[in-house]
Image 1 (cartoon, rainbow, N blue to C red):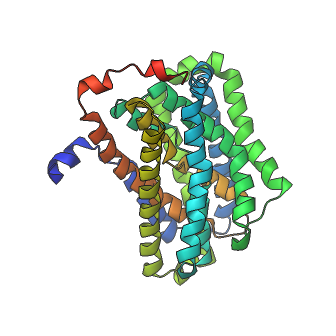
Image 2: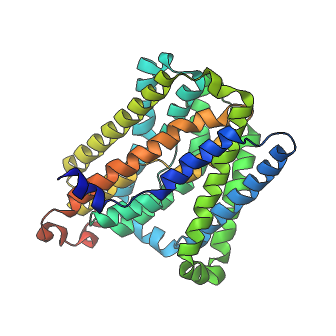
Length: 337
């Protein structure tokens, strides 16, 4: 396909521009002095609101129905919380010594995060995959990630100076699980309104993440982290992120076909099992890496996030072009498989 035609079919990612602009603002005008505690308080409020909205929008019925497809869900979770960490350990063992400690820790941090929700479902839909199963996979991944990610950080990132404490678990519960639970509890009353306002509230979601990114990179700028970061390290992180994604995409595709999943289920496994959540990852990094240069740690995640969007947009278009007869097979028939 010609490049111009491909670009015309993939929506321009204005959010990427907003992320880069936020980093630029943090580099020029970081929150320091009296502005620093104000920024931290604003981040706490924004993250609370972000996870409250996640809880209020998540349909419990959809999760229950999706869990019935246990083989698919198991494969996605194994990819997210086992395959990714193993590949991360291998890559950092081979090439991590050429990276600054913060970027090496950040690369491993990418590998222990849950999957995305919105983009996993969107790409599965574009590719004509099993959308209900994708909704379940992404949602369950994020719920489990609130517990599994801190445990994996403790097990795999100790050599990078990160720690695991009861306080970290408490902070995760208070800042992430509590608002999520409140959202679920109030869903019968606020859910319909939120569904009607989803376009407006998407700006709240993304604005919250931009605020967290600004705060994290401000801390790094004030601490002088970027004065010691060489361009070669950034190029290497980009290459390792791309290699990591390519390996997971290839392995999840091969495993889906090996175990006899339908094409619709393969699409769900590939898209849900290969993504990492920026929305969950940055708030978690603020909690799990206290006193460290969080901006540098989340940089590999920001790079991975953009690579996965462009790569999966292209892949979704390829899946979508398959013959209609193949896509017409009922995915529901495989739910109990």
